[in-house]
Image 1: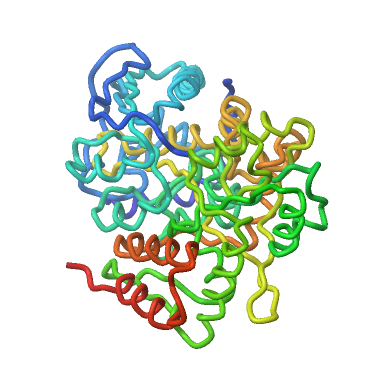
Image 2: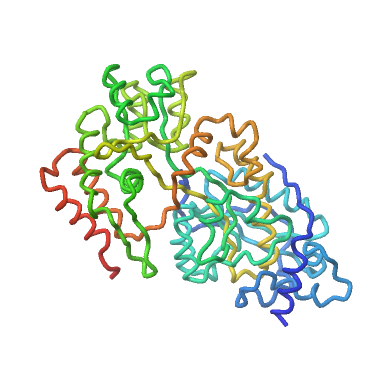
Amino acid sequence: MKKKVLAAVLATSMVAASLVGCGNEAGGDTSADNSTAATDNSAATTDNSAAATDNSAAADNSAAADNSASSDDPVANLIAATTDTVKLTVWASEEDQTLTTQLLEDFKAAYPDVTFDITLGSESESTAKDTILTDVEAAADVFAFADDQINELVQAGALQPVAATYTYDVAGANAAGAVEAATVNGTLYAYPMTADNGYFMFYDASVFSEDDVKSLEKMVEVAEAAGKKIAMDVSNGWYIYAFFQGAGYELTLNDDGSNNCTWNAAGATDVAQAIMDLFGSNVLVDMGDEEMATAIAEGTVVAAVNGTWRAETASDAWGENYAATKLPTFNVAGKDCQMSSYSGYKLIGVNPYSANVGWSMLLAEFLTNEAAQTARFEARGLGPANTAAAASDAVQADPAISALAAQAAYATPQRVGGNFWAPAETLGQILADGSAGSDLQGVLDTAVEGIMAPIE
């Protein structure tokens, strides 16, 4: 019967009209309190009995599917199947509390014939996986998380597949990279919320021209003439990836959580030498995020590789000369290579153990639809994954978001195992400070051995 119900829902889901919602570095409160009340109404549960153990996309629509009066509108069917209070728990980051509270009120207002009891808790997207995996069944019904956590969440059975939609086509409405980041083995498991957790080049347009910033070597030359610095946190695996991936050397995740890395393959020493030469200029400098922010504010650094969370820092420092663009090329043994990057997305997931899977999925859609993503950009400056929202004049006029979009063509989702970070950090430090000496192959071999170490 459940398979029959799911087929009926899938067959009718695409004809539903779209709902319109309104309302005005993924950090946040990592506490497990998760108890901030966002809405009131009453308590109870709905008649969504089989949702916790059956990962079907519409377990709580069974009553409606069997009802002779059911319609072709899956939202109407969901409402018809609901007789009790819909009780849900939602987790959002500390920074997203105000906006999410408003969106939850808008969601309730969109369905006035249904009684909701929704509790909003605070949980950082960056730590969501760790909290959820301590007890999946006790976790929130709907939660935000960073896309690099998706594989472990899927393996743990903590994500409800997006096997049916209620108000819009999730895959069709969002950028291809965001959909890829929300997909595992061909199955869509989450709802794209933002597309802005990547990096690009900020620069002071009074120092660099648009042509200058196309080449990292040219930028070093111009900055040196001006007596200024360019900053990049190369002793950080997230950023050193830009050089090796840009030159065609791969880093991928194996099914067992270990890494496959070709950074020591033939010719990779040329990449290492290029990095050493660039940082050996003492114009391109290795700086962490906080140090970089200070140097930008003080005027020492006039260009930096960083993300949207530093847009305000750069804008305040450079004023009308604040500009941003995709990453430049760098020269490897006489060949210009476009620097790559990691793309990063924030996603909304639904807990398959929810007593109200259908309503959880509908809420996840609402929190990530075009209107919600537009509101999130307006309130927090976060780049939309939704293609229509991203195409707005306001989003296109934002230098950082526009630069990130330009870099997207050269970016890949972050999919690496935990053994990557420490060896990559050490490699970056060695290349930045020039201590590698003449044995670059040995340095790369050591780094790759650590990166590819088996999972214990």
